[in-house]
Image (tube, rainbow over all chains, first blue to last red; front, side, top):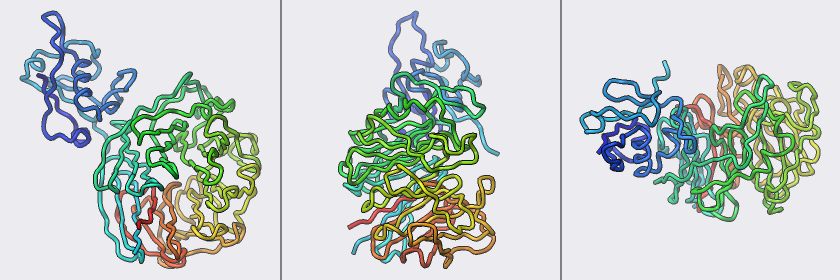
Length: 103
Length: 371
């Protein structure tokens, strides 16, 4: 079970409060839990989020959305890179947030 | 007694303003979708409880909302606005080709007859239709694929399809307007399109009477005179009496013929309203006086309507989708400003009062008359 923190505006859109938890498919010992799998699972559970985090067709992250975990910025990682173990084992959340903007 | 509901889209959420038919005491509800840009809210003429809202954000993109209970609750519907077929290029500001790229929905136009059928106008310019209450959207591709499409360029606000008129008499006739491509008409429900820009003259383009390239800001039509169209262009207020076949200028002695919205009185097809704005770089009223101008002669002759509107130190703008009329008698006129005021007149524009003064910048105003 992966813990995901959504930005406030997407919590409102998904009608959730606090963290959400998503199940990613069991890929066996060689399979990695990746950003792409987490987002796939998140959008499957909350279809109203389709298109708000990444492009619906290309899968590209929206320009002003960032991904953080374990005090690292994972935004520019390949979506198929394995997430940190502490995210995979549920110790740390995968954080989705809107980039800082404004004055 | 009948009542009215004003649907207000702002830079930071949606609001509904409701009153009885006297239109003097108002209830303000909102913000709905706080923090999101609401370019447009629209109600179905066939079912006033069916509302649609375009909700967008620079961070999170486009979301579409639908209400089946007059705005008390909302559900998220489809937001897959794909350009169908070959995407192609239009011209960018610097004259280089640039692929069409979806940004947002500017305008929603529900069918006159079917609450589940609704049209949406996009930036970059394209026209979509949904026949299932907004769940699935299909592009009417012939407009974007018009032979002139590769020459279209965005206006300063983006290459937006901001006006959609579904003709009340000719059921397959649709008018649209795009900044800065111009006006187009389809007589076959969107299968083919005709540029309807003859008579427009725009000093901002090299050939001032070109077939396309005109920065049309808004078109309005009275349902009893469907072949008569009124246009607020970037500069110039224009009129056509042959469904856009030819246009003539009707700016008369307006203090400025630049502006964004234009509206037609609900019961008087020759009575029209504009809000003059000083210029394309000074987006505020001339002399700091917020004046609606009314023509009761279908243009050329105009009178300022000032009673109840600020006549000094007023430097707000009124955007293209931010003026609407109700169908009560006397006709009510409503408009919202970039300063967050929504003004109403319940007497054809003779006198005005603010319904609410301190909303976020108002992007759109629509009004529904409720039984």
